Each structure stands twice: as structure tokens, then as C-alpha cells.
Length: 295
Image 1: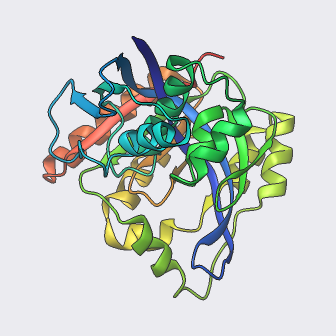
Image 2: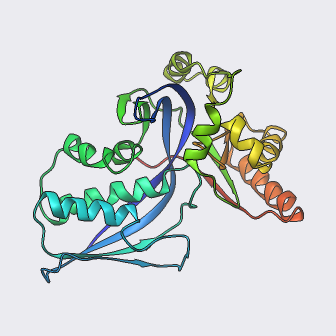
């Protein structure tokens, strides 16, 4: 049995720079993995049936267990590509909130690709695994490598950049309900006055470990459309900004918001406050204070 951690990601910046003829949006993003993860265990069943069975540690009706699941798609794709006949059992301990803009499905998919490579001794290079991954989801290549990366194209073109400064803490707040990524991108297309993040200046600030420069050059062009539909996005950001966050921003297409802190206790205190405030409004929210994965 092979057990892997599949880490969530946040967007330190998300810009849309164009659109392909097939409708896919072209993006320019800074991605960062965080120490919030699903745990997946993979077992090879030598029965020549070629089946994929997913079991959840905690039942969740929102997680499909059939061919709609990216884990299943990844395993079946690799079975097809490399003529694998045996079945695979997967035990999924889902800890990353679903439909949160944190690549929860994509990171599980990436873990499945890595596990198949190891279990069946395929000896694939990272580039070969990325090539499989991008056909399953634009975030999958990033999730295979993690760390701080610039992502372009539809998210599959990855550039190495310096990592975010150490000793930062990320307060993650995911209000209840999900958002359709497709719908948010379509809503973005109707906007006329858009403030774009300065990606080049952001990269320079990361290089210099310049926290103020990072704060001033971050941005997410999808936030304006998501926050119109999920009012808690702005409310959560306001609470973070009023309570010691260096900066707060929505990640991905939302509705998850994160705040960056230089002190764990400040982040944890704000976590408690957000929970109390939103609970009084009848809004459920998943809250975490995390660092980045150990390298």
C-alpha cells in the first residue's frame, strides 16, 4: 500500500490575460501550496479486473465515487496508457473542502498519478506525469510539483520562481456553498473596468522577501464576480484586515479567502473571531491556520 499527502494550493495572484479559440481562458498566476492536505492510500489488487474502488474515511455525498472523480479518471487513464489490468483500491481521507478554489480534486488526481507510477513501476519522469495530468485538469501539473510557481497558459505552463518568505501563516476561511468556476470565468468576461495584479513586480517582491511589495502587488481578478454572489467573501476579508492580517484575498474562483500573517497566535485569534461572527449570521465556515509543507 502507498500512502500520500495531497496538498491544497492558494493563489498569491490570479490574472486573466486572454482567451483561446476553444473558450479556455489564458491565465497568469502565482501558486503556493499550503500544509492542508488530503491523505490517500492506494492498494493494488491483483485480480485482472481493472476496476477502481474509492472508499471515504468520512462519508460525503458531495464527493463522487464513480468515473466523475478525478482520482478514478487518472487511474483509468494510466491503466489504458500502460496496459494495466489489475484493480486499484483507494482510501480517501478528505480534509480539503470541496469546491473551494484550492485544487482539492486536482491535487488528489496528482497523487493518483504518482501512486500509479510507483505501484506499477512505470518509471515516468515528472514531465511525462505532467503530460498525463494536464489532460485531466489545468491545475494537475502544478499539484504534481507544488511549492511557489508561476503558472501560465491555461495553468499548465509552470515557471520556477523563488519561494514565498518563510515563517508566514495562512488563515484559510471557506464559507459554506460552492461556486462554479466556469460561471465565474464567464461572468468575468462581462467586466469592463478590471484591476490586474502586477505579476512581474510581485515576483520581484518575492525574490527580495519584501512583504509590503508582496501585499501591494497581489490580486485576483475573479474576486469581484465571486464576491457579488457570496457576500461572506468581503466580510471575511474585512475581519482579517481589521485583525492583523498582512493582506487578505480570495483564492482561485473562490469562495475561499486567505489571510497572510506573521504570527500564528494572531492568525488563530482571528480564526476564532471569524467563526463566532459568521456563526451568529447562520453561516458555516471551514477554518484552518497552516504554514507551507515541509520541503
